[in-house]
Amino acid sequence: MSGMGMLAKIYTDDRERGNAMAIALGGLALGVLIGPPFGGVMYEFVGKASPFLILAILALADGLLQLVVLEPRVVKEEQEGASLLTLIRDPYILVAAGSLTFANMGIATLEPSLPIWMMDTMNAPKWQQGAAFLPASISYLIGTNLFGPLGHRMGRWLACMIGLLMIGVCIALIPLAKNIFHLIGPNAGIGFAIGMVDSSMMPMLGYLVDIRHTSIYGSVYAIGDVSFCLGYAVGPALSGTIVKHMGFNGLVYLISGICIIYAPLLYLLRQPPALKEIQSLVPIHTDFFDKIFLYFRMMAVWLPKPPRTKPPKYSSPRGDTEGSNYSTKL
Image 1 (cartoon, one colour):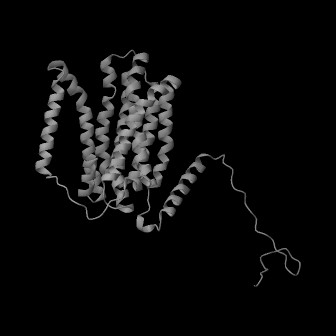
Image 2 (cartoon, one colour):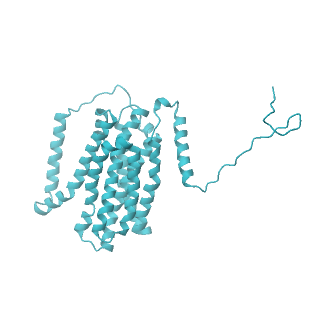
Image 3 (cartoon, rainbow, N blue to C red):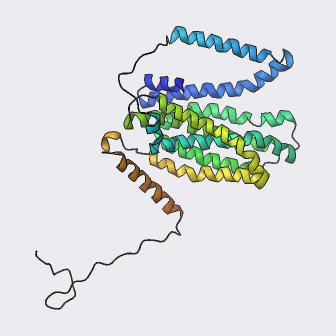
């Protein structure tokens, strides 16, 4: 959270900000990629305490390096940033944060349920159950670094929309797998798509704060971090219950449907209105919910259309019923 806020403050240009955040998210992906094999090798050949001791030393060294290079200090901002409640009430920020939640919820629901499904259907050994997620980590590293600059060119809202649609399609393909090799494609697609969403929406949160609020980024990236973690908290918590009542296929189809249905809402971020273009909060929410209603109206074609009212007919003093040539003067 603090790292993203620092990057957003240093890189004020939207393109440079996207590139910097893509590199930062690539570091996150690299840690996820290296962590499992590093922990397994150290545990097997050195001892169970060795990976934790090495990570503690690396974390201490990184903290000392930041103290020397960044020279952190408390500086009072000249402007007061928007409150957390104000940002949460902003519907455009909620749409961006929701995409982070649902995108990461996809892989989060698979982490506890996919290994069990692999044991039941493929009789997969333990190493395959862990290796099944390796393509997702590698493709996430590629996706975050690729769509940092590319998302700025094509539109971050479009990159995120395509990413959510890809997640929905790839998750729906997982039950078709018969062995671990069939899982490489769907899992790689999921990781790549999550990289698209994360590298697009993190800069978008900073952009929304710039145009709609004060350019103070701590609170908005707190919302982004919470939404990111919410997917990893809700996904595993609900996956067991859903699998119990609906089965593994029902779980993946449910998450797939949620991602596909949510994806078109990213069109609302195509041209978000700036604060100076709006007079009060009422037009903001009115315009936003009008778009929401139009979206669901297009999806639910069975909704009744409002009846058309015909203009009233007036009778002229001459007795004709054409109201176009008759006018009354007050």
